Length: 394
Image (cartoon, rainbow, N blue to C red; front, side, top):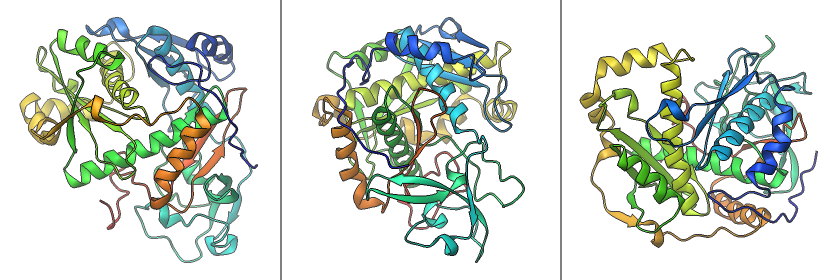
């Protein structure tokens, strides 16, 4: 069960940091798609006028409560295709498949061996002596085994009729990688990203506006938006860790479609990659919505709310994303990324250490591709689940 962080060099640096090229990853991952139930991979790029690559992997047999469509993004088509396939692998791997779970109270497992459920920010009070499912994880901050509530590990979480769920399960901190270290680093980034978004939303303060003066992949994607009449409002969120988290809000001034007021975000030790992830995240949200309009899955309740509000009102409701603020250029944001995944992980642990007692990693790999779930007790999640807030937030 122990997880050892090995020295692993990064070998690919074009718009993302990976241990292998996207073409090599695709060659390994594509044959696994049948095994995990992916029926088809669709290029959604032509649905949008932007031409920014977005792909979808369709998995009809996803567990009840999970999603069937896994979208991926990137600066090149191969990036987006691999991203969609890795997303499908993540979700497949996170489904409960008879994995061993302990059935006990927190008191029975003991404070020294378990994460207290309340540290996960619960939407309800934990009952004294409440029976829960527990899954072993490895705490890479303290280098020891720790038990975490299974509700925080599997998605969708199935209580098997034995417990009352603590909260709605979600995919936060779920990541796949070419190697374990790559997966762990990207899972850490995701948890940090959602925490920064949660705090920014709670405080109604997105930090500073971000400008991109230098030539880089993020600038090229930003130009693509602007050339097509989509205004992008880029923000560098404050975040408690200091690791760059960038958020992008889109304003489609051509269609004035309220459903196109969408958000993208990204976290990375390299600010340019964080910005690129935020921008391609906007493209992915647009592609997903447009796919819904072409007979694909859509969310009718969200559609009704958006249509009822209308474009101008929805912009006002989301006013913090379009507000004035002081700005900073990306060249002024320190790039602390290294050429090794283990060194980046060590750096991230130093940044999150003051804010959490544990960094829990669950190995959920079901195929040859490593998949992990990373859980940081105390990190905010209200951006994804508004019910999970606590008084200490902010």
